[in-house]
Image (cartoon, rainbow, N blue to C red):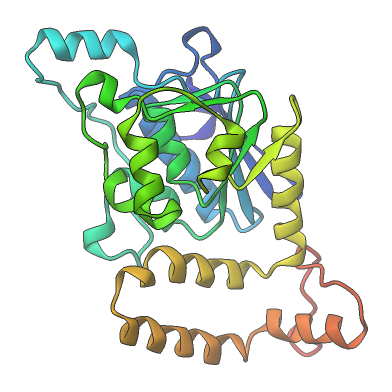
Length: 282
């Protein structure tokens, strides 16, 4: 699926930052199977595009109000039965272990950071999507809710594993047990939101942060760190430690390391978006 075929979202990129915007405001960006497929394809194109160094995912007006209510009605009427959309999906990056190759984990498996920029409502499926981003920014006026307990549902799609890793088990329980909406400030107090933004500024703030990563952080460093945080952390300590030493030894011979050392020597911040020098000058 190409980006120009998307009907539920927009994908754009500029100066190292891709922006994915959920774009069904008339449905408050309600989530469904086709939306999930487009989102995975959008992330795939960000992953394989060497010009993209960070991703911001947001929604037009609302972030995502949750699963499409019409689909929920059909599932309830059908006694819990539902059919999965049969859509071709991009494969996971090669280094993703088999046990982590689950659809919602895809944003954490790709090589570039994903920052969720949350405004309006973020509930249910929208909460899941935002939780599987690396980092979350939220508009001060946003409302966040897990919503599952009000529908008789469990923590969906691995959230019982992921959420304690983000906020700790007690704070995860506070988020999950009560379906009542909370403010962005409260979500930040619990550790789920990393930055609370002034009304109307969340996308601009997230893009500015992402652009800072694109310019000042090595793409290879980000790729390795992301794998260490979300893939290697599921290993035993010895395996994770050995992998980190191998990463470091590889990085010491890289062009990005040489560029960083040159910038340090000249007391100037590195610009990793700038064209790389020829190999004999690196």
